[in-house]
Length: 508
Image (tube, rainbow, N blue to C red; front, side):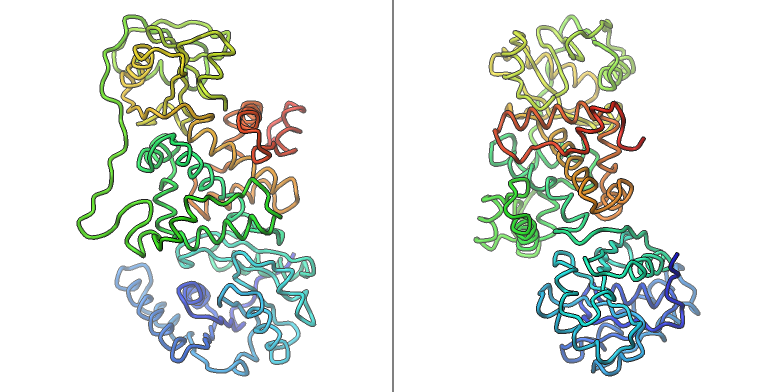
């Protein structure tokens, strides 16, 4: 097994913007001499000063000793020419996301550095294989993709191109680990792991908005309070910047030859065209200008509790409702569930969404007063749930279903009757994309889940989440979404189907 680069090895970082400076800080803190270079005048010197100030602040907060901060600062060196990088054991580039620029940089360095020097590109979207193809010794190059801010984010994707020497990838993996990071191996395919698997988090939200399922604030709060995500998709896109987020989506979509799973949104294209790029421009899905107030999410008003409540079956949702009703001293009865229903409240029959609209489910079951609720990360803890009623459902029955949830101390977001609601369809699509990445040899199951936990702070790895929902249920949601929309976008990963047919879980 390959060893990490020794501490006496010099690390070169080319490109000293926020990402390059962050990587340099990580390497210097780990004990390496770090040479910083930038083609912008004085940019490297400014980055060194900034990193030293950051080390000083860490020492003031007690997170580093004064001695350690001084030693790390002394290991930072600004250089002006490529020839000064001749002694580097590893050159990490964090320059502009342009294939030609990255090829030119490394091609020029090949005649300067030693034959055993490793090249680690921090690209987030360009093919590592394509960058390496310009080199005389393409095996020395691999992706070393940090996440911003590099000193704080644990994940590093170690990406192997077609020609990458396995020893090089293993050395970078061991080095990232020695630097206190959590590395994962990935194959050079569009988006690697995180930028590929995360696309549905944005794409499904944008589709829900387009279809009028709910407004941005309501979808965001449901994804946070029911799904457990730290930020809702529209808040997150505004923070990332729509120019960046839309460009990544377009890049992945184009690289996969216009696969409908990654189809960009016209809604986001319009924001980019208008210059409404999010927080940095003062306006995106939300208004960030002085004096602007964030819109309140839609929440159902309180309704009177129906006379009779039945909790049906032993599913996690049904058991959680029973637990919460008991805690609220609400009288109810338990019944078996023969058709998947989790509750009856007055005239309403309540199901967890299976990817069909409530209207379709009502038509196929003959239960006019059908109401569906969304997935929750934990039904015992969720403070809000999305709910939709069938077109055939009476308003009184829909209110009865809302009253049941409200009696459980759950706020209700009434959605238009879209298939799969918000959390369920998004989580199933995230799991489906992660499963496809594993099935196509991009990464391992554990790497896929670790990457999404650490790279984008998901509350649970999507594949573990799929196991906990039940792979058959996930497959059914995807199949029903595909049937509802008639699109290949919701095609089921062969890995999920294989486990369903085998009666096994992904992690077993």
